[in-house]
Image (tube, rainbow, N blue to C red; front, side, top):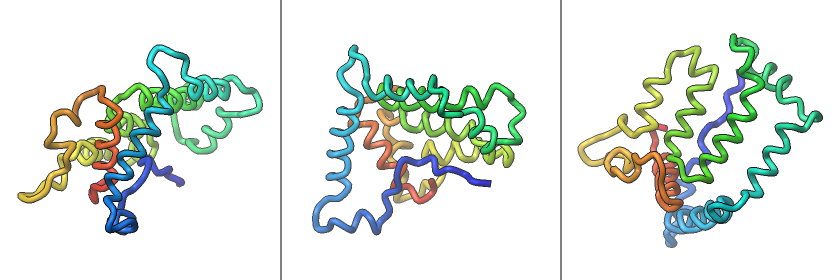
Length: 171
């Protein structure tokens, strides 16, 4: 079965070294922060991106139910296919609102049919939270810095957490 990649990006050592001698991680963090701020828009105002995405939920041409059923035929919950597009838009809204990227990733993992079939959510949660892969000399920043454990965070902290996940070889 096809398993979609749930991580927004991977920041491998090969990619990080591409821009050397420049600080590729710093450049990425700076521009990702600016982009996320622009996409999130001004607090209190209608978000054009989310409004546009919600149009697709109501579009009769886009057959969400059919495509979801094809992707998840063994799902016993008959309401799940109708709910999946709304959940994805809700998660996009959570990203723009400043929710912790770990929580959003864990929500996606919780809904993944392969994770359910293998009963691997608990182990994956420990990996995503940075509890796996700690050594005497290295621990994922999201596991050691309390501000990266907060449920809501600034755009800069969101990007820091995303980069930490993207560079963790255990994820």
